[in-house]
Length: 625
Image 1 (cartoon, rainbow, N blue to C red):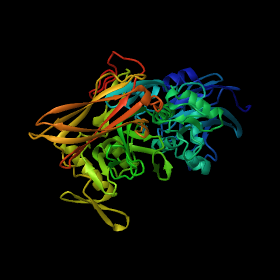
Image 2 (image 1 turned 180 degrees about the vertical axis):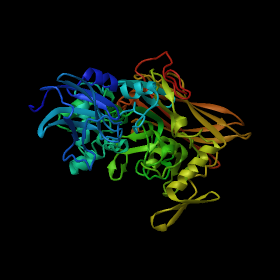
Image 3 (image 1 turned 60 degrees about the vertical axis):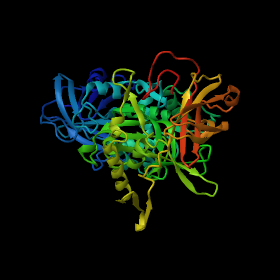
Image 4 (image 1 turned 30 degrees about the horizontal axis):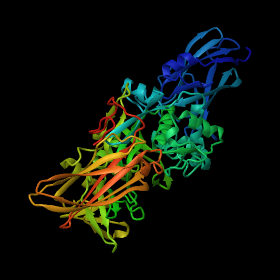
């Protein structure tokens, strides 16, 4: 009998694409998801004899091997599916054979080469059938990325557009973003991002073998979306100067960025800030099959020394002393959450995981962040992988203000320590509404449980022994330091203060506000009020001072007074950045030594909006109070 060979292959792209939710990918090759069977129809040179065997080989990456699980050799079988790759005959009509192939739910993801060997009576025929792409599978219950809700799978895997929330806590604004994971070349680019990583360049075979694990893959993507340690996708810029590139505010989606990175031969694209990094990473992870969403945190801490507090140093006018202040609180910060199991931590920590591609701090020597379990953050388990202390501080650090004196001594100033981590937001499933998910990250601010978790986090991080109000912190080498400022509040002053916006803050117009002071006692008091104002970036970094004045105020018993403030357009127009943000501060010095710092962030608008759109905790329209 003559030997047998394959003459034609039908990848059944329409049938497989519908079954695997991959029909939107425009790639020339088949795209399927792991842990789920897909079908091929083979045209043979003659009918297949029952004694003849079909042996398939799949391989991915360089130097593919069965030992690394990047290669599998298997033949058609009538047996139940095993733990590895399997093949089964579906149907046969004369010289046409339909077979069903299936990968294990823990298979390495990426581009595969499929080959076949037909054996008959000591004669063998080998043929490369072609390439296909294997992705993570949120529809497969055995896959680590499994997500039970079909509505959530539609939103977090298949939706190619979304909303990113920005602004300030009391005036949250929505920006549309085109993720475009099904656009031309995007899947190829996402696979290229993995291949351009330092880990792949150094040891490609081992790197590819780790791509079965969503923890590994997301950590690589978190590093590669920024360009700090590699020729990653986006170059960050926070100085308000965007020469030679595009302002972060002008991007409206990920596709143009990713395509520019490819066409520029992997040269980082200029420029990005946090929402750009998050938008691009959302595209990449949805494209690879991991359910991912974009999350915005308002009043987001950047705790550089990882002591779980933001220590801000100010002068007598409330101006931030940049040389002394290493920590910061951004008006907002945007990151990602991806849904998968934490086999390294245990089932209690499955679910949403924080990932952040914005290059803020190094993690194991590389600018990346996560995955950090959201559950671990809420429960104060900051010792668990990865980057728990940094994420915990972003949402739950105590905000501590210090007045720095000329003799280089410091004094604790009363201010709102609970302003960190407000209105944590993401787009709703199936609509453009804003959903507040703050309770996923922490217990109610100031509650007994929240304070217990904060103390637990300090203990987990430092190895703390609490004695009264003193906090003993164990450092490397066994040396102990103590500080009583982590948990001890400043003395509450006998006056209260608040900025009030008198007119909607419109770009091109003068700003009209008032500082409202109230005497909380039954005795008269004198207060020295030092006012300052500056244009700022959204990271709250000052750009230029636009207000500097002092007032002597006498408050009668229980009296309230307003200090009117006007900042002319001519005063701020030259120094306003594209963020259009201004920070006001009032250092209130009571005669008996009490000190109160009042601050307000203002975002200027180009036009008046009447409709209430995406308010924050208590904001509405354009006139936050």
